Image 1 (tube, one colour):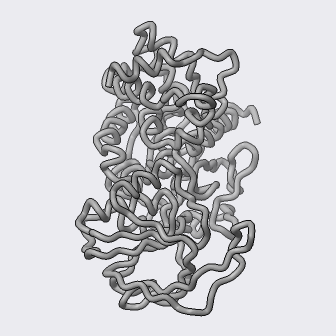
Image 2 (image 1 turned 180 degrees about the vertical axis):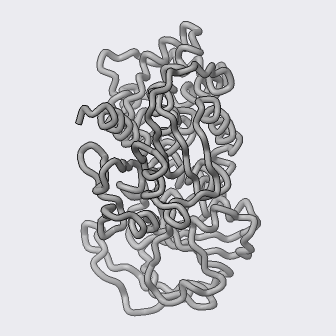
Image 3 (image 1 turned 120 degrees about the vertical axis):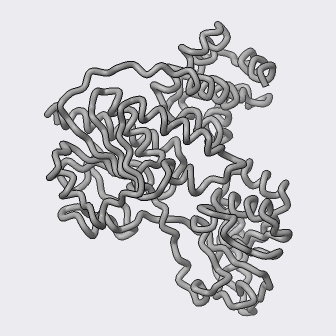
Length: 406
Protein backbone atom coordinates (compact mmCIF):
# COMPACT_ATOMS: atom_id res chain seq x y z
CA UNK A 1 0.00 0.00 0.00
CA UNK A 2 2.72 2.49 1.00
CA UNK A 3 4.70 1.78 -2.18
CA UNK A 4 1.56 2.22 -4.30
CA UNK A 5 0.72 5.67 -2.91
CA UNK A 6 4.34 6.81 -3.11
CA UNK A 7 4.32 5.85 -6.79
CA UNK A 8 1.05 7.68 -7.31
CA UNK A 9 2.38 10.80 -5.59
CA UNK A 10 5.45 10.73 -7.83
CA UNK A 11 3.22 10.58 -10.90
CA UNK A 12 1.62 13.94 -10.07
CA UNK A 13 2.67 16.66 -12.53
CA UNK A 14 2.04 19.47 -10.00
CA UNK A 15 0.08 21.40 -12.62
CA UNK A 16 -0.01 25.20 -12.34
CA UNK A 17 -3.74 24.98 -12.97
CA UNK A 18 -4.76 21.82 -11.07
CA UNK A 19 -7.84 20.50 -12.84
CA UNK A 20 -8.08 17.75 -10.22
CA UNK A 21 -8.70 20.40 -7.55
CA UNK A 22 -11.28 22.13 -9.72
CA UNK A 23 -13.01 18.81 -10.30
CA UNK A 24 -13.46 18.21 -6.57
CA UNK A 25 -16.71 19.71 -5.21
CA UNK A 26 -14.89 20.88 -2.05
CA UNK A 27 -11.76 21.87 -3.98
CA UNK A 28 -9.38 19.70 -2.00
CA UNK A 29 -5.90 21.28 -2.39
CA UNK A 30 -4.52 18.18 -4.07
CA UNK A 31 -1.11 19.48 -5.28
CA UNK A 32 -0.44 20.95 -1.83
CA UNK A 33 -1.34 17.68 -0.12
CA UNK A 34 0.84 15.64 -2.46
CA UNK A 35 3.77 18.02 -1.91
CA UNK A 36 3.41 17.72 1.87
CA UNK A 37 3.17 13.95 1.55
CA UNK A 38 6.37 13.78 -0.51
CA UNK A 39 8.09 15.92 2.16
CA UNK A 40 6.98 13.41 4.83
CA UNK A 41 4.79 16.08 6.46
CA UNK A 42 1.89 13.68 6.95
CA UNK A 43 0.41 15.34 10.03
CA UNK A 44 0.42 18.72 8.34
CA UNK A 45 -1.17 17.17 5.25
CA UNK A 46 -3.80 15.49 7.42
CA UNK A 47 -4.61 18.75 9.19
CA UNK A 48 -5.03 20.49 5.85
CA UNK A 49 -7.36 17.78 4.56
CA UNK A 50 -9.42 17.76 7.77
CA UNK A 51 -9.64 21.55 7.76
CA UNK A 52 -10.94 21.57 4.21
CA UNK A 53 -13.19 18.53 4.61
CA UNK A 54 -13.74 16.88 8.00
CA UNK A 55 -15.04 13.82 6.14
CA UNK A 56 -11.97 13.45 3.92
CA UNK A 57 -11.35 9.95 5.30
CA UNK A 58 -14.86 8.96 4.18
CA UNK A 59 -14.77 10.75 0.83
CA UNK A 60 -11.44 9.14 -0.02
CA UNK A 61 -13.24 5.79 0.04
CA UNK A 62 -16.72 6.39 -1.37
CA UNK A 63 -16.46 9.46 -3.63
CA UNK A 64 -17.06 9.06 -7.35
CA UNK A 65 -13.39 9.79 -8.04
CA UNK A 66 -13.64 8.96 -11.73
CA UNK A 67 -16.06 11.85 -12.18
CA UNK A 68 -14.18 14.26 -9.92
CA UNK A 69 -10.46 14.37 -9.04
CA UNK A 70 -9.28 11.36 -11.07
CA UNK A 71 -11.65 12.17 -13.90
CA UNK A 72 -10.22 15.69 -14.13
CA UNK A 73 -6.53 14.69 -13.86
CA UNK A 74 -4.61 15.83 -16.93
CA UNK A 75 -2.56 12.62 -16.94
CA UNK A 76 -5.76 10.72 -17.59
CA UNK A 77 -5.95 12.17 -21.11
CA UNK A 78 -3.12 9.99 -22.39
CA UNK A 79 -2.40 7.70 -19.44
CA UNK A 80 -4.08 6.53 -16.25
CA UNK A 81 -4.91 9.42 -13.90
CA UNK A 82 -3.21 9.94 -10.57
CA UNK A 83 -5.29 8.09 -7.96
CA UNK A 84 -5.24 10.79 -5.33
CA UNK A 85 -7.96 9.00 -3.37
CA UNK A 86 -5.44 6.37 -2.26
CA UNK A 87 -3.08 9.07 -1.01
CA UNK A 88 -5.93 10.94 0.66
CA UNK A 89 -7.18 7.82 2.40
CA UNK A 90 -3.73 6.93 3.75
CA UNK A 91 -3.17 10.44 5.12
CA UNK A 92 -6.70 10.98 6.43
CA UNK A 93 -7.02 7.72 8.32
CA UNK A 94 -3.57 8.20 9.81
CA UNK A 95 -4.53 11.70 10.89
CA UNK A 96 -7.73 10.56 12.62
CA UNK A 97 -5.64 8.20 14.74
CA UNK A 98 -3.18 10.96 15.67
CA UNK A 99 -5.43 14.01 15.75
CA UNK A 100 -4.72 16.44 18.56
CA UNK A 101 -7.87 18.27 19.59
CA UNK A 102 -7.01 21.86 20.43
CA UNK A 103 -8.97 23.72 23.07
CA UNK A 104 -11.02 26.38 21.33
CA UNK A 105 -12.26 29.43 23.21
CA UNK A 106 -16.02 29.15 23.63
CA UNK A 107 -18.39 31.97 22.85
CA UNK A 108 -21.81 32.29 24.40
CA UNK A 109 -23.75 30.88 21.45
CA UNK A 110 -25.43 27.46 21.42
CA UNK A 111 -26.30 25.64 18.22
CA UNK A 112 -28.50 22.60 17.74
CA UNK A 113 -27.65 20.25 14.86
CA UNK A 114 -30.49 17.96 13.81
CA UNK A 115 -29.16 14.80 12.18
CA UNK A 116 -25.79 13.06 12.55
CA UNK A 117 -25.27 12.08 8.94
CA UNK A 118 -22.61 13.59 6.64
CA UNK A 119 -24.04 17.11 6.82
CA UNK A 120 -24.61 16.99 10.58
CA UNK A 121 -21.15 15.59 11.37
CA UNK A 122 -19.49 18.19 9.15
CA UNK A 123 -21.51 21.09 10.56
CA UNK A 124 -20.97 20.10 14.18
CA UNK A 125 -17.19 19.80 13.81
CA UNK A 126 -16.79 23.05 11.88
CA UNK A 127 -19.03 24.98 14.29
CA UNK A 128 -17.25 23.55 17.35
CA UNK A 129 -13.91 24.61 15.88
CA UNK A 130 -15.34 28.14 15.58
CA UNK A 131 -16.06 28.19 19.30
CA UNK A 132 -19.77 27.43 19.29
CA UNK A 133 -21.34 25.02 21.79
CA UNK A 134 -22.97 22.29 19.72
CA UNK A 135 -25.53 19.62 20.54
CA UNK A 136 -26.38 17.01 17.91
CA UNK A 137 -29.77 15.29 17.88
CA UNK A 138 -29.81 11.94 16.06
CA UNK A 139 -33.00 9.88 15.82
CA UNK A 140 -31.20 6.54 15.48
CA UNK A 141 -28.91 4.72 17.89
CA UNK A 142 -25.66 5.44 16.04
CA UNK A 143 -24.21 8.41 14.18
CA UNK A 144 -23.51 8.37 10.46
CA UNK A 145 -26.92 8.51 8.79
CA UNK A 146 -26.54 7.12 5.29
CA UNK A 147 -22.91 6.22 6.09
CA UNK A 148 -24.07 3.98 8.93
CA UNK A 149 -27.32 2.62 7.57
CA UNK A 150 -27.07 2.93 3.80
CA UNK A 151 -23.51 1.98 2.81
CA UNK A 152 -22.45 -1.66 3.30
CA UNK A 153 -19.60 -2.58 5.63
CA UNK A 154 -17.52 -3.94 2.76
CA UNK A 155 -17.45 -0.44 1.25
CA UNK A 156 -17.12 1.62 4.43
CA UNK A 157 -15.98 0.24 7.77
CA UNK A 158 -18.21 1.28 10.64
CA UNK A 159 -15.09 1.51 12.81
CA UNK A 160 -14.39 4.75 10.98
CA UNK A 161 -17.69 6.19 12.18
CA UNK A 162 -16.84 5.22 15.74
CA UNK A 163 -13.63 7.24 15.37
CA UNK A 164 -15.66 10.22 14.21
CA UNK A 165 -17.97 9.98 17.21
CA UNK A 166 -15.00 10.01 19.57
CA UNK A 167 -13.50 12.99 17.73
CA UNK A 168 -16.80 14.87 17.96
CA UNK A 169 -16.95 14.22 21.69
CA UNK A 170 -13.34 15.41 22.06
CA UNK A 171 -14.38 18.65 20.37
CA UNK A 172 -16.93 19.09 23.15
CA UNK A 173 -19.88 18.25 20.93
CA UNK A 174 -22.78 16.73 22.85
CA UNK A 175 -24.56 13.92 21.03
CA UNK A 176 -28.10 12.88 21.87
CA UNK A 177 -28.87 9.56 20.22
CA UNK A 178 -32.38 8.14 19.82
CA UNK A 179 -33.64 11.72 19.99
CA UNK A 180 -36.13 12.61 17.27
CA UNK A 181 -36.93 16.26 16.66
CA UNK A 182 -40.47 16.52 15.37
CA UNK A 183 -42.22 14.22 17.86
CA UNK A 184 -41.81 14.72 21.62
CA UNK A 185 -39.33 17.53 21.02
CA UNK A 186 -39.89 20.08 18.26
CA UNK A 187 -37.83 22.95 16.89
CA UNK A 188 -39.76 25.47 19.00
CA UNK A 189 -38.56 23.60 22.11
CA UNK A 190 -34.96 24.04 20.99
CA UNK A 191 -35.34 27.81 20.69
CA UNK A 192 -37.17 27.83 24.03
CA UNK A 193 -34.25 26.05 25.68
CA UNK A 194 -31.70 28.62 24.59
CA UNK A 195 -30.33 27.47 21.25
CA UNK A 196 -29.43 30.53 19.22
CA UNK A 197 -29.46 28.79 15.86
CA UNK A 198 -30.45 25.44 14.39
CA UNK A 199 -28.88 23.47 11.55
CA UNK A 200 -30.88 20.73 9.82
CA UNK A 201 -28.90 17.96 8.15
CA UNK A 202 -31.40 15.12 8.26
CA UNK A 203 -30.69 13.87 4.76
CA UNK A 204 -33.11 12.01 2.53
CA UNK A 205 -33.56 8.51 3.89
CA UNK A 206 -37.27 7.97 3.24
CA UNK A 207 -37.66 5.56 0.30
CA UNK A 208 -39.63 6.75 -2.71
CA UNK A 209 -42.53 4.59 -3.73
CA UNK A 210 -43.21 3.44 -7.27
CA UNK A 211 -46.92 3.94 -6.70
CA UNK A 212 -47.79 0.57 -8.22
CA UNK A 213 -49.80 -2.43 -7.06
CA UNK A 214 -47.85 -4.94 -4.99
CA UNK A 215 -45.46 -2.73 -3.03
CA UNK A 216 -46.93 -3.88 0.30
CA UNK A 217 -46.44 -7.60 -0.34
CA UNK A 218 -44.36 -9.55 2.16
CA UNK A 219 -41.54 -10.34 -0.26
CA UNK A 220 -41.11 -6.71 -1.39
CA UNK A 221 -38.63 -4.36 0.31
CA UNK A 222 -37.25 -0.86 -0.10
CA UNK A 223 -33.50 -0.47 -0.59
CA UNK A 224 -32.82 1.80 2.40
CA UNK A 225 -34.74 -0.51 4.73
CA UNK A 226 -32.80 -3.51 3.48
CA UNK A 227 -29.38 -1.86 3.67
CA UNK A 228 -30.05 -0.67 7.23
CA UNK A 229 -30.08 -4.29 8.44
CA UNK A 230 -29.44 -6.88 5.70
CA UNK A 231 -29.11 -9.81 8.11
CA UNK A 232 -32.72 -9.31 9.23
CA UNK A 233 -34.00 -10.12 5.72
CA UNK A 234 -34.35 -13.54 4.12
CA UNK A 235 -34.38 -12.69 0.43
CA UNK A 236 -33.97 -16.17 -1.03
CA UNK A 237 -31.91 -17.26 -4.03
CA UNK A 238 -33.50 -15.06 -6.70
CA UNK A 239 -33.74 -11.30 -6.22
CA UNK A 240 -34.99 -8.56 -8.54
CA UNK A 241 -33.91 -4.96 -7.92
CA UNK A 242 -35.88 -2.12 -9.48
CA UNK A 243 -33.40 0.68 -10.15
CA UNK A 244 -29.77 1.02 -11.23
CA UNK A 245 -28.33 3.80 -9.07
CA UNK A 246 -25.41 3.49 -6.66
CA UNK A 247 -27.74 2.38 -3.85
CA UNK A 248 -29.12 -0.37 -6.09
CA UNK A 249 -25.58 -1.59 -6.75
CA UNK A 250 -24.99 -1.68 -2.98
CA UNK A 251 -28.18 -3.70 -2.56
CA UNK A 252 -27.12 -6.18 -5.24
CA UNK A 253 -23.64 -6.69 -3.81
CA UNK A 254 -25.03 -7.01 -0.27
CA UNK A 255 -27.65 -9.54 -1.32
CA UNK A 256 -25.02 -11.66 -3.05
CA UNK A 257 -22.86 -11.54 0.08
CA UNK A 258 -25.82 -12.64 2.18
CA UNK A 259 -26.66 -15.81 0.29
CA UNK A 260 -28.70 -14.79 -2.76
CA UNK A 261 -27.37 -16.47 -5.90
CA UNK A 262 -29.20 -14.78 -8.76
CA UNK A 263 -29.52 -11.00 -8.46
CA UNK A 264 -30.75 -8.88 -11.37
CA UNK A 265 -31.15 -5.11 -11.58
CA UNK A 266 -33.73 -3.63 -13.96
CA UNK A 267 -33.54 -0.25 -15.73
CA UNK A 268 -36.25 1.54 -17.71
CA UNK A 269 -33.81 3.11 -20.18
CA UNK A 270 -30.33 2.37 -21.46
CA UNK A 271 -28.50 4.78 -19.16
CA UNK A 272 -27.18 3.49 -15.84
CA UNK A 273 -27.34 6.07 -13.05
CA UNK A 274 -24.65 4.41 -10.93
CA UNK A 275 -20.98 5.25 -11.43
CA UNK A 276 -19.12 2.96 -13.82
CA UNK A 277 -16.90 1.67 -11.01
CA UNK A 278 -19.89 0.65 -8.88
CA UNK A 279 -21.47 -1.05 -11.88
CA UNK A 280 -18.21 -2.91 -12.54
CA UNK A 281 -17.99 -4.09 -8.93
CA UNK A 282 -21.63 -5.25 -8.95
CA UNK A 283 -21.07 -7.25 -12.13
CA UNK A 284 -17.83 -8.66 -10.77
CA UNK A 285 -19.71 -9.84 -7.70
CA UNK A 286 -22.20 -11.63 -9.94
CA UNK A 287 -25.09 -9.22 -10.47
CA UNK A 288 -26.84 -8.94 -13.85
CA UNK A 289 -28.32 -5.75 -15.32
CA UNK A 290 -31.26 -5.76 -17.73
CA UNK A 291 -32.12 -2.53 -19.54
CA UNK A 292 -35.35 -1.43 -21.21
CA UNK A 293 -37.79 -2.89 -18.68
CA UNK A 294 -40.68 -0.85 -17.28
CA UNK A 295 -42.20 -2.12 -14.05
CA UNK A 296 -46.00 -2.44 -14.16
CA UNK A 297 -46.90 -4.15 -10.90
CA UNK A 298 -45.62 -6.76 -8.48
CA UNK A 299 -47.34 -10.00 -7.52
CA UNK A 300 -46.45 -12.93 -5.29
CA UNK A 301 -44.22 -14.38 -8.02
CA UNK A 302 -42.25 -11.17 -8.51
CA UNK A 303 -42.23 -8.05 -10.72
CA UNK A 304 -44.15 -7.77 -13.96
CA UNK A 305 -42.62 -5.64 -16.74
CA UNK A 306 -43.23 -4.31 -20.22
CA UNK A 307 -40.34 -3.80 -22.62
CA UNK A 308 -39.40 -0.19 -23.32
CA UNK A 309 -39.56 1.23 -26.83
CA UNK A 310 -36.66 3.50 -27.83
CA UNK A 311 -36.25 6.13 -30.51
CA UNK A 312 -33.11 6.61 -32.61
CA UNK A 313 -31.52 8.66 -29.80
CA UNK A 314 -32.16 5.84 -27.31
CA UNK A 315 -34.84 7.83 -25.48
CA UNK A 316 -37.74 5.84 -24.07
CA UNK A 317 -40.88 6.73 -26.02
CA UNK A 318 -43.25 4.05 -24.77
CA UNK A 319 -43.51 0.36 -24.05
CA UNK A 320 -44.70 -2.82 -25.71
CA UNK A 321 -48.05 -4.38 -24.85
CA UNK A 322 -46.93 -7.81 -23.69
CA UNK A 323 -46.45 -8.38 -19.95
CA UNK A 324 -43.29 -10.13 -18.80
CA UNK A 325 -43.46 -12.00 -15.50
CA UNK A 326 -40.18 -12.42 -13.63
CA UNK A 327 -40.15 -15.18 -11.02
CA UNK A 328 -38.08 -14.28 -7.95
CA UNK A 329 -38.13 -14.84 -4.22
CA UNK A 330 -37.83 -11.12 -3.37
CA UNK A 331 -38.17 -7.74 -5.06
CA UNK A 332 -36.29 -4.67 -3.82
CA UNK A 333 -37.30 -1.16 -4.90
CA UNK A 334 -34.38 1.25 -5.23
CA UNK A 335 -35.48 4.31 -7.17
CA UNK A 336 -34.45 7.17 -4.85
CA UNK A 337 -35.15 8.71 -1.45
CA UNK A 338 -36.72 11.85 -0.05
CA UNK A 339 -36.62 13.70 3.30
CA UNK A 340 -39.01 12.78 6.07
CA UNK A 341 -41.73 15.33 6.78
CA UNK A 342 -41.70 15.44 10.61
CA UNK A 343 -39.90 18.76 10.90
CA UNK A 344 -42.09 20.54 8.37
CA UNK A 345 -45.28 19.21 9.96
CA UNK A 346 -44.27 20.32 13.45
CA UNK A 347 -42.54 23.64 12.76
CA UNK A 348 -44.47 26.79 12.02
CA UNK A 349 -42.91 28.71 9.15
CA UNK A 350 -40.73 25.86 7.90
CA UNK A 351 -41.60 25.15 4.26
CA UNK A 352 -40.69 22.43 1.80
CA UNK A 353 -41.02 22.03 -1.95
CA UNK A 354 -43.47 19.67 -3.60
CA UNK A 355 -40.67 17.11 -3.63
CA UNK A 356 -40.37 17.41 0.16
CA UNK A 357 -37.06 19.29 0.10
CA UNK A 358 -36.54 22.12 2.57
CA UNK A 359 -36.58 25.54 0.90
CA UNK A 360 -33.51 27.68 1.62
CA UNK A 361 -32.24 31.05 0.44
CA UNK A 362 -28.77 31.94 -0.87
CA UNK A 363 -27.47 31.81 2.73
CA UNK A 364 -28.88 28.31 3.32
CA UNK A 365 -31.44 29.73 5.76
CA UNK A 366 -34.81 28.03 5.62
CA UNK A 367 -38.12 29.85 5.64
CA UNK A 368 -37.96 29.81 9.45
CA UNK A 369 -35.75 32.52 10.96
CA UNK A 370 -32.56 31.14 12.52
CA UNK A 371 -32.96 27.67 11.01
CA UNK A 372 -30.42 26.64 8.37
CA UNK A 373 -30.13 23.46 6.32
CA UNK A 374 -27.78 21.71 3.89
CA UNK A 375 -27.15 18.32 2.35
CA UNK A 376 -29.68 15.93 0.89
CA UNK A 377 -32.54 17.50 2.85
CA UNK A 378 -32.38 20.48 0.46
CA UNK A 379 -30.93 18.88 -2.69
CA UNK A 380 -32.29 15.36 -2.69
CA UNK A 381 -29.94 12.35 -2.76
CA UNK A 382 -26.43 13.35 -3.76
CA UNK A 383 -22.94 12.24 -2.78
CA UNK A 384 -21.30 12.78 0.59
CA UNK A 385 -18.85 15.32 -0.81
CA UNK A 386 -21.74 17.41 -2.14
CA UNK A 387 -23.28 17.39 1.34
CA UNK A 388 -19.94 18.61 2.74
CA UNK A 389 -19.76 21.31 0.06
CA UNK A 390 -23.18 22.73 0.95
CA UNK A 391 -22.64 22.36 4.67
CA UNK A 392 -19.43 24.41 4.59
CA UNK A 393 -21.35 27.26 2.97
CA UNK A 394 -24.19 26.94 5.48
CA UNK A 395 -21.77 27.00 8.43
CA UNK A 396 -20.15 30.17 7.10
CA UNK A 397 -23.62 31.72 6.84
CA UNK A 398 -24.53 30.63 10.38
CA UNK A 399 -21.38 32.32 11.66
CA UNK A 400 -22.26 35.54 9.82
CA UNK A 401 -25.83 35.35 11.12
CA UNK A 402 -24.79 34.94 14.75
CA UNK A 403 -22.26 37.73 14.37
CA UNK A 404 -25.11 39.86 12.96
CA UNK A 405 -23.24 40.31 9.68
CA UNK A 406 -26.18 39.37 7.46
